[in-house]
Amino acid sequence: MKLGFIGCGNMAQAMITGILTQKVVSPQELIVSNPREEKTAKLKDEFGIITTTDNKEVAKQSDILVLSVKPQVYPAVIKEIRDEVSSEQIIVTIAAGVSMEAAERQFGKEVKIVRVMPNTPALVGEGMSGLCCNEYVTEEEFDLVHKIFESFGKAEKITENLMDAVVGVSGSGPAYVYMFIEAMADAAVAQGLPRKQAYTFAAQTLLGSAKMVLETGQHPGELKDAVCSPAGTTIEAVNVLEKKGMRSAVIEAVTAAAKKNHQLGKKKEK
Image (cartoon, rainbow, N blue to C red; front, side):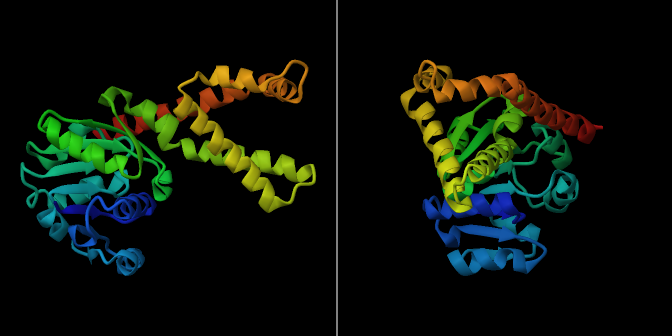
């Protein structure tokens, strides 16, 4: 199986690193194109992958082709490669706001499309991806793409109408988490903890708490209650968070990101 990437930005680099680290494909089975060779140089030196500046060459060689360029560049890239793409190839799109219908319309023919929203923790093998596909993709092919995205984290199959929600909660989500870690660490530093240790305490606490939710299967509220002793320190802190509107702020943030993704999609379809 030949896996190709057109574009080598942060998300592509995170995915490629995860895929090669987990040995989903060999370096010789992975080809990446980018107009600037320096963008692919590090990956080429580190993993020995095939690189080129020719998008058409990647399109010709790939069984699965990932379009990892900015949404506004999709029309130009698809126009460039569409004559090289066959009905047997699987096209993976990871751009926010680009529906499967819009991508297929740009190709101007029936093509197999899997739409995915991954996130950057893929770089450390802890990504979260939502996937959907069009009617031309077989169940076996969808399972294959799903397996690739599970190689660097968790991946869930969804219907396309839920993609805006996925963008809001996980696609954009790492930024919210980093802000929370930074805020927790700042408070710890204010209480005298050295900065480096403060980040470790805050980040590990979030990592461990997330793992508790995933591995125990318990409701987050139940896990929270288990930490809140009567008249203790934690319930005092929770009370402050409730007064300051933490829940509503997070809900509004996720909703805003989802709405923005929906607006981007509508704008691109015009």
